[in-house]
Image (cartoon, rainbow, N blue to C red; front, side):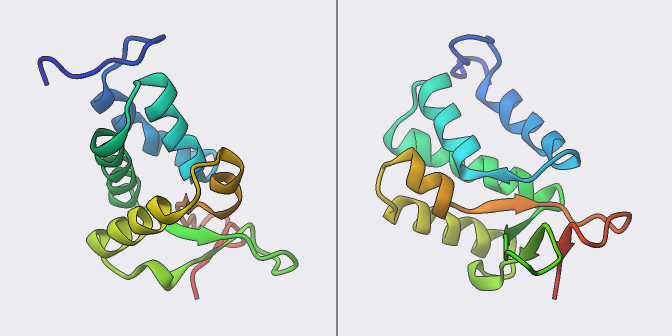
Length: 131
């Protein structure tokens, strides 16, 4: 995009940051509390522009093989697949957006109750429980 917004500190475009986000899945889960603040503070986004950025970021994670997850203490797994968001990329994306927009605008609430995404890895079967 020619006039795409750039990160205030790094100069990266929004599309570049969204494109790099799935790279984190090889190391750790990615949560809305990683995505939303970067859009707000790093790019100065709000309103519909912030929502569009978050939507694109979620789609990018899902298209890279991530699934929505939750942590269940004592389960023996890092994360467990969270089916409440739906089964298709579109359903999951819109469900997560709907849930996020209904949360109070508080980073601590977002960290505790916002969606998380992880990519199952057959080399590490205890990372994401899929059933």
